Image 1 (cartoon, rainbow, N blue to C red):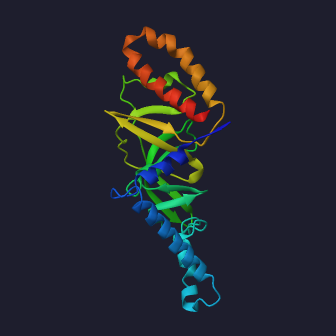
Image 2: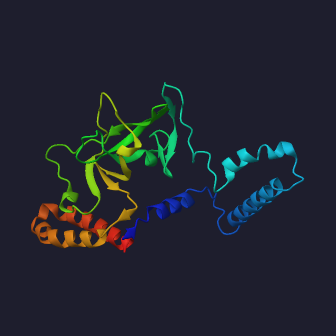
Length: 247
């Protein structure tokens, strides 16, 4: 059994998005150290017996805003009224779900649109509502490929990726689902008029061996068809990279 490395890559992305203002190599590290020291001193002062009572009353808010163990949205408050109230994001079982206009990456999911659906599909959360009936996700489906277009990942049933259209499906009504219908978050990579959707489940069982066997089984067929050579190279490189990551 292997563990998916996506959380580490997200952490690297967070570090890369920090605005350094070209001050790497001293000033940035000093700022981080000083900020950490100030925060530690403030936390220590709030725990002192001689801390003013009026300041202690704000400690709960301080913990929610800055503590690494207590998060303001770790225990979302459900709307107790009958009318749904829209929220920007919702944390469920330690996973953050957001509407597309708040955070596109956290809005992309793989889900079952109806209780009778045989297989999950990809979509983007457009709205999140809470009421006394619970939390509901309003999801717009990723459009399927046009007739005649081929999905190169169909040759690799063990590889968790599928090709869709780059457009979202035009729907008169969005799919309204609960969290039990959500399978996992997905990553979306768009190129030209298509989008590759990849399942980001954190646990894969025997995925590496299955990817390698699928690759070997399809290699001869792909090499004999010149029109699919580019597709083979693209998919094979992704397969090998992900197999290496999961070893």
